Length: 349
Image (cartoon, rainbow, N blue to C red):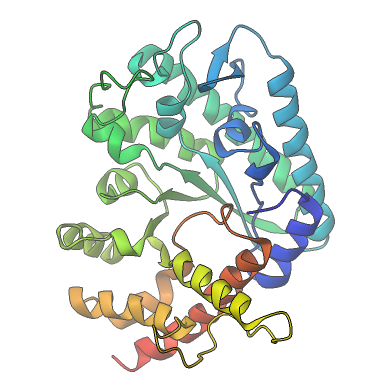
């Protein structure tokens, strides 16, 4: 999410997503609030530090770790205050073991941790312990919640294909065997003892690796789903997995914001998704977002009932790069599209 105030953000999220709130990441606050820094703060017996090139394993915990832990504690405090008495699903998210290994550098080296299989094993085990403790902490703060744990794995397809470059960019790390990919991912997923989701907004979503690792749900950018992915996607649907589908492109919100600015300060801002006459291009709507999912279902020939039962509509990727108002619109838009989707699917039955 954008911004830097944990309490305001937690309230915004609960206002717009009262049935599925989540613990926000606010990377705009700097190192330690980003996806990698927050996750690294949870590692057990492994310290990290910030370098000009990013995060690196350190000899001992220092200022960077303390800062990351402090910001996470502030985020948890805000969530606990806003969700006091809440009962229902609550999503938290961490970087997955492969994205962590592909991003953090080895100690005293420019090589990423991924290049050292022994270090990868240590990172995955440390992350599993840290994730378990983090889930327990959130459960203690919001005892009525049913936790959903999302692992963000944007680097997973590149790890599987040998596409992770060294920091110098001159070489690439050798591809990792699929059995090892599944095993390390499963180690972290199992440790959470919660409903688990694996999110990846890169092309080539590895449906089979993720479902065979034991994830309860998959999360991906719908616009990146290609014809070659249809069979694996259909198998995932037929297997009963939850589907968090990134069907809302942030481009639509940015165009909407630009039009609002051109109307001037005197013009009333309409909610995201309301149509207006535009000679250049029709404005996107929540119905259009929901219809994009229906079209995929029709194209692949999936049963309509499975869509209504398994799908949650989400933004295509994170919202940190847009304004707080746009982020609010995005959450509201997804909620409205989710309300419309069962109606559209019923027309196909």
